[in-house]
Length: 328
Image 1 (cartoon, rainbow, N blue to C red):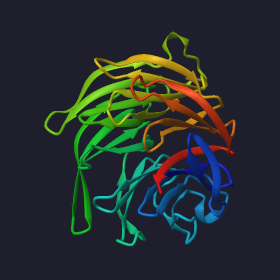
Image 2 (image 1 turned 90 degrees about the vertical axis):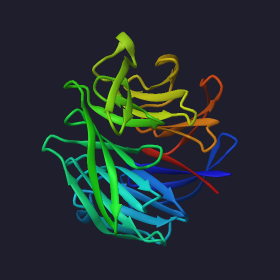
Image 3 (image 1 turned 30 degrees about the vertical axis):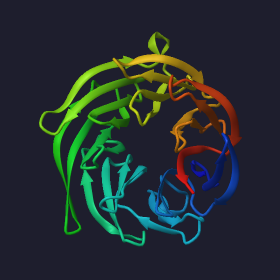
Image 4 (image 1 turned 180 degrees about the horizontal axis):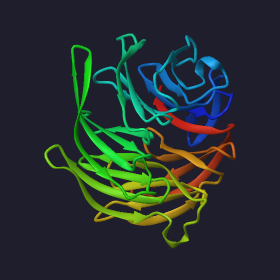
């Protein structure tokens, strides 16, 4: 069995939903924290970020933690502004925070019991940087970073000794201005990037010795792109065969096969407006889509052999922004 954590861009906070046979039902909700745009789950603990708040103490954002029952809630100030993504390293017990507002990364250390210590690392990029997404290599020894503002992606070797962290730059790739690399998906030595402004899907191979190698790119929406279209989320199946992307404006999910090269195989409505996040269930039998501006989560049945999606149902939640599955 599994549940879904839902973060929202609203004062409604965080939801826990039961997910069974492709249907969602409410288990619990906490409205202590608002605008929780990204969440993570580890060992019966929930970690997340407040992107911004009307409350003065959280106006520039904060890191939050709570038990899986949505109890024992805590908030921690961060030095960055406008945090937009959180990544958990369960090997080193670290939490990485990407700060969009001022182009920085913060890293926090977790105690064995799941509690959070103070920040142990802060990385500042340029004044134009907008750090938007973080992803690990399969062995979690490499950290990939997307900088939407400076149109770059980076790869760092993670060096962690005696509770001291260092990120050694291995490679970077510069995109054309106006491209805006937003989110990443990693499979083995393949790195896929969805761009926000140009609505493209990029494929790179990566090695520690040679860095990023551009393989190819493809327009997600083709010649039908308008000024209202922006790339948003990307997911890759565990077998690396299928990539799923969402485009705001078009309000559609685009499915690609990856072999022998990127190939668009399906376009399907997200059955809502502004698909902020897309996420597999644990077993990848379903894909869920958080439709921010229509206040709904759409559930699609997924054919694991063909990659195709079929709309199943929708569940109402105000301004959903993030979907995280966890097993119970």
